[in-house]
Amino acid sequence: MNTPPSPPGVERAEGSSVRIGALVPLTRPGWVEAGRHLLAGLELAVGEVNEAGGIAGRPLELVVRDTAADPHRAAAAVDELAGLGVAALAGEYHSVVARAAAARADALGLPFLCSSAVLDALTDQPTEWVARLAPPQSRGWQIYADFLLGAGHRRIAVAAQPSVYWATGTRILRDCLAARGGTVTELDMRVLTSAAVCDALVDHRATALLLLVGHPEPAVPIVKSVRGDQRLAEITIGAPAGQPEFAAWATSLGDDGAAIPFLRYLPERLSPLGARVETALRERLAEAPSFVAFEGYDTVAVLADVLRSHGADRARIAASWPRVAVEGTRGQIQFSRTPSTSVWQWARPPIQVVDRDPAEPDRFRVLHAG
Image (cartoon, rainbow, N blue to C red; front, side, top):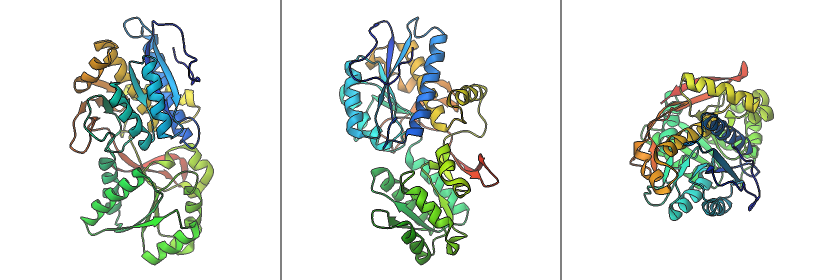
């Protein structure tokens, strides 16, 4: 029994369902395309749970709230959903927003399975209430740094906007590269135009430019400027946060959007479950599903398993994180404590560095895996 996003106070009256609150960016300035894929995965899994009999005969219900990439709005949504009696929270894509939601969920004693945000410090202090499927940023971005180094890049420039997420990514890259003789130069996009970025790349003799900025602005103008500058014909453009994963990237950039490596969280080959889910997601989305859609599906798969085993009691759900063993679309999901994170973490989700094939931009090439 899925429910579309609804205004506060407009909820189903029936009390027999088991409710999960879903936090999803569905309007700008949130990354709407990512939110749509995340919600598709969540809804597909809820539908399948209910087709299989629900939770001990009770339907599973998704109560969706749009975060619009706003941490304050997300925290308010957590308060509202807690008051509506949800058994747990799921979702969110933006790391800074997920951090606000996690802090509030921890304070309220509400289990939160974060689908897609990667910021290592999802909470200030260790918590038993929060678990996460996406890999911590430190692991994913270190794999990206390994890819850059393996491709011979030692002089890296980052076009960055102010954000805890971007700043953390820059620090991870700088630490990884410095240990092997590389350098990272930060280009402040609060003051630089796209043309000025090109001049800075020439001045610094950078061989790679990483986009640590929003999409479409200023990412699209930067890519177009760099691609159009003959001085930079040999430079590699990268987007570790994954902007090229989504169709809007190819639509807005065309051929210029190809050959831009990014991180995604898929295995080399999907399991039979993953392949079946991919087909269903493709039909639901009318396009190829991103890794974010698989994260949404896996979130509900884990929560449904926990709810079947432990019921809808919030404390029992949170206490079950270390005992989870669920076959997801991208591998066996189990949670543990890792040194860099404050939440229960799926320790080994698959990580790839991929790009769009210049000869066939709808096809992805795997360049590196970790």
